[in-house]
Length: 264
Image 1 (cartoon, rainbow, N blue to C red):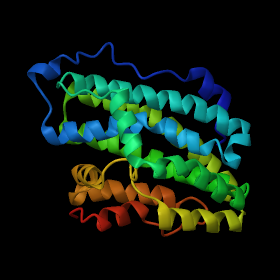
Image 2: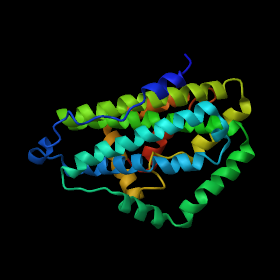
Image 3: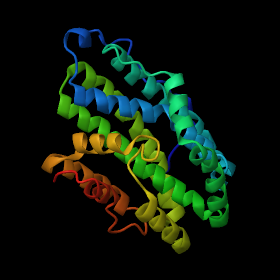
Image 4: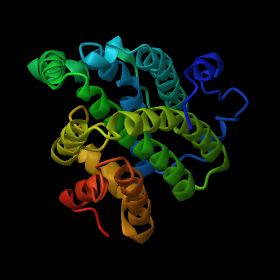
């Protein structure tokens, strides 16, 4: 089924939390491991604008539906970060722009060169790069939505679960766009399939890789996806990715867990 970009842009809205009693966390605080994961999630959501920056120097920026989607996608992801930050603030944990700026500065030339490297690679690939972009985005959004729902189950806190499910619902709309675009651009396009498969197999990492310290990536992956139940969720993400044309047999999420020694 085609994705209705006009409907998406007309119905896009920031995630709401004003009706939730977040002050309940002052008397019933979340455990440290969960707060650490929430901090990671908020940080990653705030960094979405950097991903958008990198995409604007690729062939994707010339596609009207793609740029329209990414404009509103970036806005929704920003508000996900704001919502999670409100929970963190109830635990006396602050996450502000200066901290994020400092994190970007620590990346140094790696961050400054990222758009240039992206531009060169993307323009060498030509329009087939858009298929890579869409499949990569689908993998990220499948992962993000699963992560939010998984944390809601693990923590089983009514207020937190409500907020996380609201965020996950918006992530599901993002998945719908990316996956629909990826299928269309991969179907009957062998070169696009080869490039996408290579990119996902060789270079994909859990959302936040390269921005967050590896110790934090490992913590979040272990917190959310360790043990039989967690591995089932990881396998489900991989199954969705593998159903994209030409991506059969990929298990990039499970491979990422294995590399980090996440218990099965």
